[in-house]
Length: 493
Image (cartoon, rainbow, N blue to C red; front, side, top):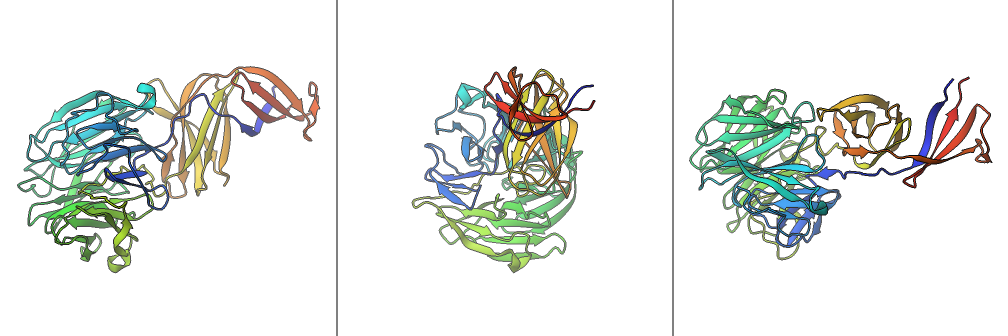
């Protein structure tokens, strides 16, 4: 009868490992100053030419910037204009833009832009391929027109399947919202929801989806503007059930991590930050965010669990340090973080699209590796300490969709290894589930064939032996890529 193999430990790395993409690691505030949120907010000097007025995006691999865009130009990691990266169709002073990774791809990114209200208000997309130019990236398609006449507001969130992404916009002068699903096949037709209040004259403001992906908040900036909160169905893309809150010059908007509170800023001199308790409808004045020489800007939930924002022409950031707290319990701090001396912020911070579990709960994937031998595929992954329930191993099929092929119980360890009875090269990823049912996906890896070149045997005390004759022994296998791993063999006779 055949032997059954149980893997003990190994030190193997794959032929290709794709880094984990972060939309929330680095924020660029102006040419002089950036903030990294992988730990406590840390200042850094961004690469040359990277600057911000309003809508912008930063895509990172761990701590390292991959590219940045202001809506008009895309810059690579060095601050140089990316190949074919000019005139992508947006505008420096448009309120928002979004960048999302194409489902099923480890190298393609979509940048969605809208012109500002003073122009044609075109809605366009551009595609970045980060596998081009030795990893520095290139724009392969740009300025593709989706439609005209949109507000400056745009946001995105994950579909319920945690694969695809909803792109949400609003038509200027109307109460018509459009949600388009981005899949591995491209951009779908709009799901139209005609609901809520018509936009006002300038169609300026911001919109965000809640971390639990069940609500949408929208600000309408125009003198006696308003904030409107809707229900959002992340399966169908339907927007419904509006609740309107009158406001003065509302601009930036964000949800609390628990999705029960909405925060908004006032884009005016001596503007304030306010909190809406969605359960009671009470609006709290948390405090001033600007003075007579500054204007309140955008806000964003950061990876450290706080909400940060900026006011124009300042070198500081204000913060809500306990954003799940109601009223004063939110711990508003008007000087939460001081930027590098000489910084002069504008109005924009990057809009971060959270993973399914929310980036506050997301797993830190330290490594994901795999290789194929004559008979099996071996996968290994390592995570930072996390309260995981179980893992799913998923393999990409011919239609470029991922299918679950194995379920691995979490053991409390930070390193896992699994053997599959499959010996072909393929693309894989690991999906982690916590005890609340929330999930987080690893980077995608390509697992390639490796040929065995040598095999040695040891007893359970580590002494080298010849051809094994006992029921249990350790087998050490060396592959042609120079990697070695060991496994304990238990024979069933």
